[in-house]
Amino acid sequence: MKRTFDLLLAVPAAVLTAPLIAVLCLLIRLGSPGDPIFTQVRAGRDGEPFRIFKLRTMVAGAQSFGAGDAVLPDDARITRIGRWLRRTSLDEIPNLWNVVRGEMSIVGPRPTLPGQVTQYTPRQWTRLNVRPGMTGWAQVNGRAALSWPERIELDIYYVEHHSLWLDLQILARTVVTLLGGHGLYHEGEGGGWVTPS
Image 1 (tube, rainbow, N blue to C red):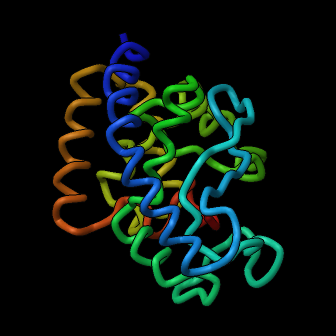
Image 2 (image 1 turned 45 degrees about the vertical axis):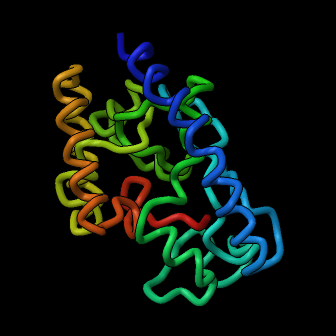
């Protein structure tokens, strides 16, 4: 049922947002050279690696200098349009392709870096029992204001209690958050570390 729900939402959303992504890609290229689509290996369900798709918000090759995989407040590597994309969470729209491919779900714990997974306790590993999501219980319950362990506990709660009804609640709260002008992943995405894109 969850996979059907994902496809019913992700397929039309991917088609409808394609023109927007094209315009954003053009603006990204005009602002800084490099591929406007950023990809990075993340840990998926059961820890299986997959390549996530996002809109690039930093200068090309940002991981190779500065703070590396971390993103600092007022990080100089973030482009002008990238800062806006992060604030509005529009950089996450290409995640829809990951949902269509079956690597992600619309709702679930945010996908983390493989290096983070190696630090998990056996209990924390249970957050990988479901597909990672575009939005999740932790994102609508504090996101960047929460510590890494707090976010993981919220993700574990979701894994233990997930249902269509809970997914609908999370989606509704996500819409309210975005319409209120507050991005869900501006800071602290990925289970406690901020990752470049």
